[in-house]
Amino acid sequence: MQRRELRNIDEVQQISLENALSSPKVEVAYICSESSSHEDYIRQFLNAGKHVLVEYPMTLSWEAAQDLWKLAEQKGKVLHEEHVELLMEEFAFLKKEVVGKDLLKGSLLFTAGPLEEERFGFPAFSGISRLTWLVSLFGELSLISATLEERKEDQHMKMTVCLETENKRPLTWIEEKGPGLKRNRHLSFHFKSGSLENMPNVGVNKNIFLKDQNIFVQKLLGQFSEKELAAEKKRILHCLWLAEEIQKYCYSKK
Image 1 (cartoon, rainbow, N blue to C red):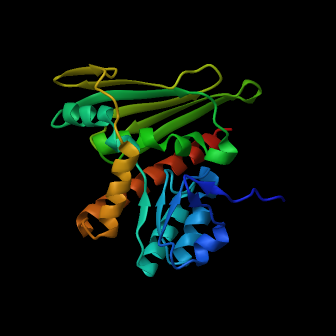
Image 2 (cartoon, rainbow, N blue to C red; image 1 turned 45 degrees about the vertical axis):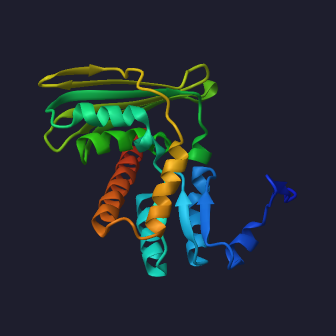
């Protein structure tokens, strides 16, 4: 296999993976690769004694994520899963709208162009940012049922997931992807005190990736409490567990 030439980018010399792993000058790794490669890269960098920031999903397996967190703790390193969707203006708006309200039912539909499952995982994993929204807004969820409709000949798929809150309120999550589908999010939440239908224009998302990196730096500096870190870890693992359960349910129906 021919390897591409390493060169300068913005006057910074690129280095090989082997050099990044072995160099004492490299203390932190940012992993921004296809989801299918995350687990292997995280494991390599943690074993090499590096802190790690990785794009979501951390892994395509709940068990693997648990193992990697244990490894990070053993090595005394920070393992941070990026979640820019929680830094978006839309989520901040929703958080304010939802707080203190009694949910009756809700739905979240996301549409976008096709995505290769081999590279980015089953739709419940590649779409985990939507699941993270629902869990962050309404607490831990239970899986009731799930279906996956696929037309592989035209790269179309639709995943429909029925979830339930701890108060037995139904939530429906739909991911639909295919050629010609615009990247869009449609939501509908019904409360005892009223309804929220679709998202108003709440402004431009500014520097959300930089904000997430700042959170990572704060963790490196020990500025997050053990309670905050434990709550974040619990949420991330719950979402990965749910994604895996959805995948199992859909495959069991094939």
